[in-house]
Length: 300
Length: 271
Image: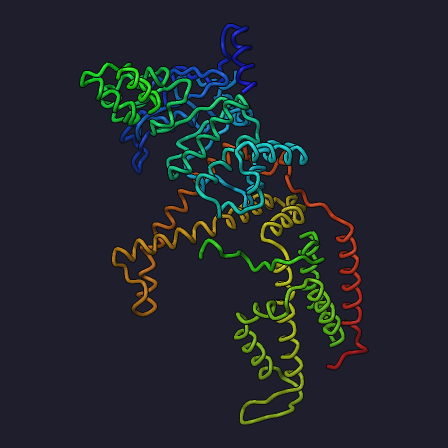
């Protein structure tokens, strides 16, 4: 909390927030070839996307399947390199091959399937995997592992086998694994898609906590609207393009546009919107049920 | 259920042998094997048996538990023993119809039986007292000298530990696919062996596809966490020799020297 306040204060003094990730005119295409190597189809996954992400922000990228949001995310830690345009992570261009490991340390990534990203056979070993790779001395690895496991609330499970944990717990281990590398920014590529509602809640609250307490920039890619409500900024993607951006409130005001993109709005927002259409005088972009209750009690 | 299976045959208890560095156990097992093939008289085997008995006692693994590993090779052992018994030429002790048993044959058969059982028990002590994890660590560090001749030791060890991590996951997946196919009317149990093998195809194909997909995901996740081979990598749990490992090495070499010298002395030869 203090850190975020400090960062905001510092940014206020400096007049602007530092850019942690900057995507400029990014284009990426998947090219399908037949057996002879002839091109038979080109899918533009990311189509001239511009995005500035400030240090310490909680960013959400929304989009339904195939909107290019995951492909874009893979550009943020140099797993993919854009065909046109540039991606700059913490001042480093991702196309610089010798800087790849710096970029990946600064921008950690959590993937969708918890089973396919845990390498260690014991929780603590898995969290230690990243620091081992970047050559952190042994004692410091232990410190980092302890700290990151505590910050996602999984310290009691450090000696367990990951196979015996729930999906939400496994995903928190993955987050701890990224955190142990001390990244400035964490990219979460649909981290909750394979989890039950309880696991989803666990993971999200862990992520929010990190953002607030440690000041880590979070880029959350998702198609669940409910997860976006608390974000600082939302980008909506469709067919490889950014079609909307703004605060959650600004974006969720445009219920019709979201519907045309085959995206749902949170239930409460939808209810408020429907009520408003029927002539009840409610403000736009209601995000939580508490807000709706407050607004309604004001009216009656 | 499937989730609870233990890998290898690690027997969980606290003992001196369990605490030893995996490199000591690895080298110890190899040297023990070598010693078995050097003996020329019963004294050597007697020393080997005593040595093994002491190690078993120290490891606190119940002897019966250890013997279980022998079950699998009983048939193999009987065949080798019988072959040696009947096919060795020499001084005939007993003959019946076309079969004759020689003195050399008897000695040979006993030797072989002893050797095989000592080999099996010797290696199972290692797997019973070392977790698979520790074993791969020990291999990685203990066999590092092989890097000189371009053996990718780190990569092999990494592959082994990933395989160990994914065995339970893939088993669970097999279980799921099996149930899914059974639910669609697949018949896995009736028919002769060929039919049953054929019935496995609809299980293996999706299993392989999913395994490849997992491998792809895992490779990406590893790269995202800066994995770039064994160079410049530090260890969270580095292997360090303790005092007990030094003592174990000394005991091991004393055993090796004593057993091989006595085991090869013609003085004790009975052949």
